[in-house]
Image (cartoon, rainbow, N blue to C red; front, side, top):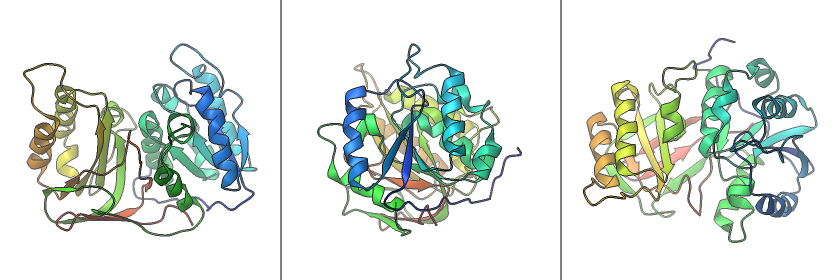
Length: 312
């Protein structure tokens, strides 16, 4: 299929009694947390259908490329399944991206939920089909933990009723990096995965977009390298604005280092587009969930992000 740049394909909302499919398209999920997460889905009134290969293990992958691919295709084709929720992230989604039959996704649009390594699939799905997907905490990685935050859980309610989301300084301490206002589709996710799309058929399209970035366990020098690559590729200059999420444990392991803030300020300052940092989006708890591929508005001066509903 040809890449669809401007199409927006919203999935149908969930209702109580619907069935959600669970897949593991990246690394093997924590099994105890995964089992514990089922109670939360049942509290939402949802039924559960497991992917055939969720419990597979192949080194650092949750099964072979073929079997993980099969679970994606099967869940999108299964008419009983109304939403697909990823058990966890880790590594491996990019390995199967070029083998996905995107016509299956375009013909069977449904809710797709995850983050971290799943960023590659968010980008691929939207750019190939226009499908709106959801950047949110996953079952084994987040929602099934004993100390899972109630705030993280409540944002899954956006899947049941179309409503605009708003993020202000009341939710977390936000900092203006570049003042101003910007509008556009919101895209992005994990910085490492966004950079890994460059030079591929899934290269992230940032033109006139609000770009979300977040990451975990990357030293400032690594964040510097990745942002520099995006800058040199023209991805920062093309953007309408920036939403800077959580950079969990992105601290230097050496004495002589720039701080993370110094690195972010340098590249966002070079782009000179409206930008705010401090959003609790990413590898953090609590974790604000949002749809990707919908229209959004950033009022950086007043520290406010407004996002259209991701469902119909």
